[in-house]
Length: 168
Image (cartoon, rainbow, N blue to C red; front, side, top):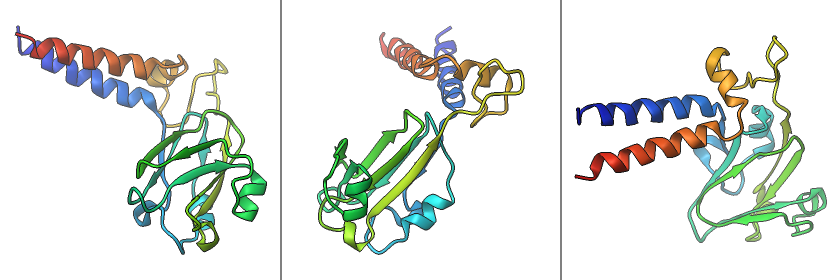
C-alpha cells in the first residue's frame, strides 16, 4: 500500500500544474534582464492575461526590478513605485487587467532595462460560464481554473501527501 502514496502525490502535483494554466513570461527569454536589450520587441511578442506571471532573471546584487507608474517608466525614475524585487529570480503575479511598467532601479533603465506590458482580462469559454480558456484546452481543467486558488490547494495537498509519505 505504501507504493500508492507516491503515485498519488505525482498525480496530484501534475493535476495542480495543469490546472494552473498560467503562463510564466520570462523577460528577455534566454537573454534575461540585462542592459541593451529591446524589451519592447520582446513584450510585443507576448500576450499577457490575468493570472499569468512575469519573471525577471538576473544576477542577484547586480540588477533589480521596480514596478513604477508611466511617468517613472518614461523618465527612468522611481515615480509611483508599487513594488520592488531583488532575488535574481523574481516571479511577479499579474493579478489585474491593466498596464504594468517595470524598470531596473540600479541606474540601468537608461540603458534599456525597462519593460511595459498590457495584461488582458481572462477570455471566457463559448458556454459563457466564465471558465478560463487561456492556458488550457477546455473541459474539466478550464472549469477548475475558474475556482480561485484551486491549483494552489491541490499543490498544497500534494505537498502534505508527500510529507505523510516520508513519515515512518
